[in-house]
Image (cartoon, rainbow, N blue to C red; front, side):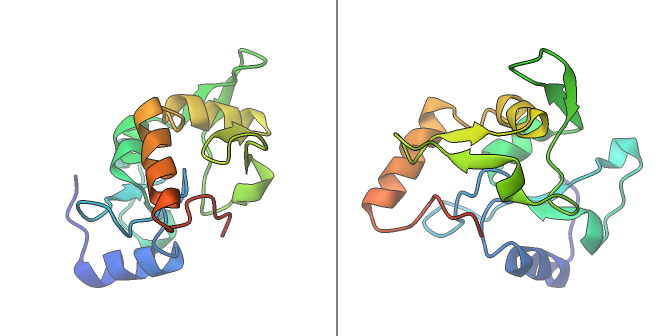
Length: 142
């Protein structure tokens, strides 16, 4: 994890509404602070600037790592991962109608991101469910 200046970290968290910019998990009620993700990884030339940073929960950050693509579960084709700096979340994701703790991808980018970041891992779904039961909304679209 790279060192992000405290003032920059605060700006990123504020812009994100203190939600993971990928799975929308709130940072409230979590054990520790969320990491700041380089949307374009440093290994791919990404820089540590506000415009290239996103707040990410530890799970999304760990699974994304240095990846920029994933596989669309419907077509089997390679698709770019969701970029919260240039794409709109609700154009790629929605909450499942029957289970509001499950994310669905509505585009190749959304599906590839859900799979690559393992956004519906049973443990993460359980965290969403528990937070919702505690009155902490987890299915915000921002």
